[in-house]
Length: 308
Ligand code: GRG
Image (tube, rainbow, N blue to C red; front, side, top):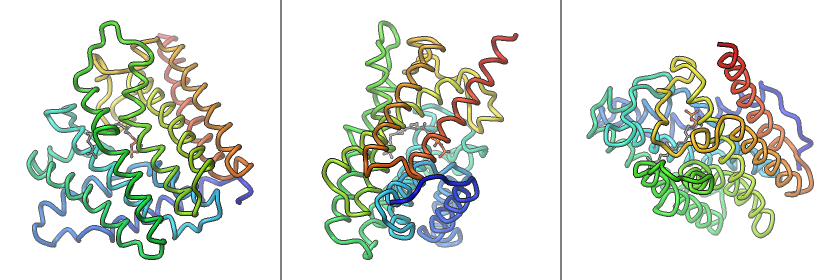
């Protein structure tokens, strides 16, 4: 078990470790068909925060696994995440123009190639887990199972379908939470449970890791909704102000109640991580500092909005 505390340099180092590995796990840009591989690289290697990968690696570390042991599983999760962002931005979905500070994939490579790049990334994610022969077979099977469940028609895909068909009239907090649980928290909880599996953990502690990731994901989406209302496009690096008609906690329960909701999930997550393996550790410290920095940026914009 680790002793907790991490520095911003540790996190930056891990982000660079993930970025470096991601770049080697998919074909180079010149390999045929070049537009497809460039499109995959455009989204996968764009400057994302790598939150899901970090959570996976730190969850592994929480139970004593080395960073290298968790690295490829973490990259697989980032591949799925990048695929979901490509699809989410398509004209048939959110019709976004900007992502991670860059033009959305389809704005550069066209819709057909963007769809193919997303499929190829998702497929590669499972290949990367299968090829990770340093892990026991049982762990690779379990990782595949967790990731597949998180993506499919009971996870991300279900969340996206509900998001697209959303009827805001008479929507309740529970309705919004169900969409958030699938659209966002499913991949967070998969990542934290996968970290436990890499470390050889099953049973109650793996379940705690799963619940910890879910609560973090729910808080993350509520804070993302708050920033969609409050932040500027350039700062967010993506289109904002587009949650009208979308399952947003802010629009359903209001700004202040949404902030309270996020706080409750963060408190719940803190409790769970401390129960798993008996300490908060670097994993808890990282998760809580991520949430605090998101909350602070919400508070900053909230203060600005109230002053106007
Ligand atoms: C089959 C993989 C697949 C997906 C199909 C399109 C879709 C279903 C799901 C989209 C789900 C989606 C886009 C949810 C939003 C999640 C979210 C909060 C994204 C932003 O995450 P950050 O802030 O982004 O971690 P970075 O860029 O930092 O990685």
